[in-house]
Image: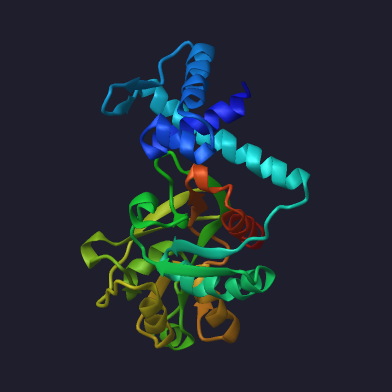
Length: 293
């Protein structure tokens, strides 16, 4: 018996709840479906299903084997399609999630190029700074900033998420320009955190870093609002470069400490291992790596 046919019968038996239902789906007899299962169990030397007259139960090994069979059969089907030059173009709806600032100021400007390249794909983007559970909430991919915890997700690294320290020309004219990171303690600094908890870390060109306590009369829980506050002269801001660089180029903000190594955080696009075979997800991940390499 062909091992791939036997795997297909086994996967259907698990998903449909019985060998007889799998037999109907495959267009074979129940006896033949049973033979496929016995062939697999004999080949593996392990029991896959525990069956009674009323129901069947997966063994622990059977559960693991089921997951592996699904992936193997998916790979075989895709390889056959490629061999026959019938690989489907990316199509359908793709659900992704990204941090608010990156999503607004980097992902959104990039999406027109992706959608032009793949006209059969539509994208549902959810912007949130919390860690979204891909399985529970039905997302195919997530862009995450920061160190990744150990998980079953596959991660593709993107360019590090660089930060920038800036202030408006009006603020610097009024309060003076800080020359060293330690000078920030004498300035109005705009922060997410309450005054007592805010520290900014900066490194000089020689690699030594300093953790500078900062304070200010305004804290805001949203990066875009902090940018607007800085543009209007309310203080000095530490935010992602993608959020501030347009204002720097336009002269609305001035970058401070250009000779210092500014903080950065790793950034990755993550996805479930069994979903990368989707043509639309694969195209999206490849596009992100290309655009934000």
